Image (cartoon, rainbow, N blue to C red; front, top):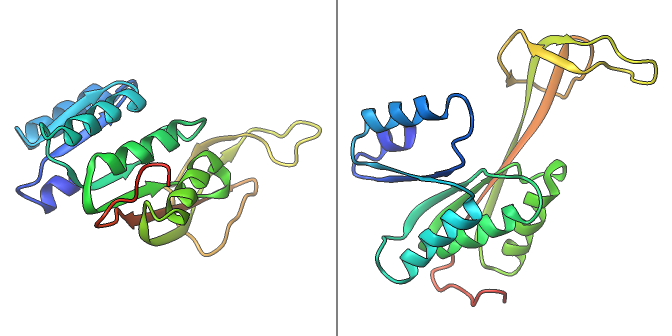
Length: 188
């Protein structure tokens, strides 16, 4: 909704499985707030984004100016999502990826490969440490810390990682890069 609000003439294409309990309500809210400006593509992104990229290639759909990738973080799905995002975007478009970090190598490795092969250029990355207080389960005999049960405060920026009985922290890292003005051939 922030993107739609900040760009009054833009349209938004959302590719998602829509399998979470709040998915239908969220979709209805966005559709009602921005009628005619949002298009939902339900299903596996390896299929739906690929089909969208084919429509861009044959001229039946306009290419994207911004593509935000935050899908599955395992297997080959991130690689497919990045390649299809590039194919679906105009030259010079911005591609943004969430969780380009060591903890998600299936995201990090293909992103770094695209930057290294210059299929994405002008990369900028940022990271932030977020902390929440809450409670953990009583640890087992071998575990130092129990399983995190719930947050009592929202995640908020913090200065350094802390994982103890009352605090959990996560490191978020996201990157952005541009599709080159002249795209190198796929696979180069």
